[in-house]
Amino acid sequence: MNVLASHAAISLSLASVLWVVQLVVYPAFRFIDPEHFANWHYRYTGAITWVVAPLILLQTAGVAARLLFLDHPDILWSAECLCTLLAWAVTGFVSVPLHAKLQNQRDERIMKTLVQSNWLRTAAWSLSAVCSWIAASTPPAQL
Image (cartoon, rainbow, N blue to C red; front, side, top):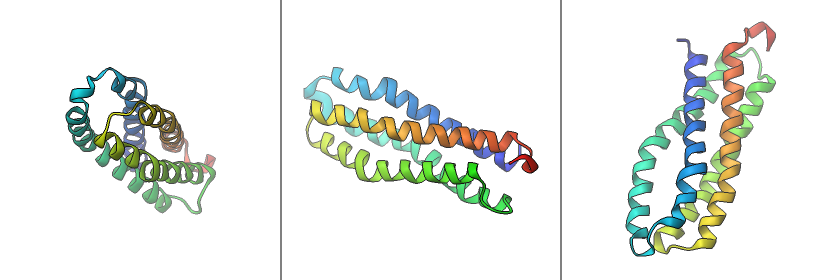
């Protein structure tokens, strides 16, 4: 498997995890007993970090490494780069602070904001995965 295909696989894996979180995990927050929510949330964020962090770091490294394979940045790389930057920004400035608030108290409004804002991350990393997949399956002369 070449580097571009590996990068595409990592990007698709990351997007898949985001879709599961978006459609299954975050909506399930509201069904967790408020008395046990803080403990559950603490365990969830610790566990999901072991899944998501390596994928995010490898995906970001892959975006940077793709530049080595290009004579000049192309539209796919530019789109993937912008999507990755957007996803990082939403993660750092929105998702992480919202999770920190949820760790202190279970709040329906915060959970709703987390679900809504996570659509942007899900879309950004999904579009990034599509760009990386296209780049891996298209001969360089056609990009």
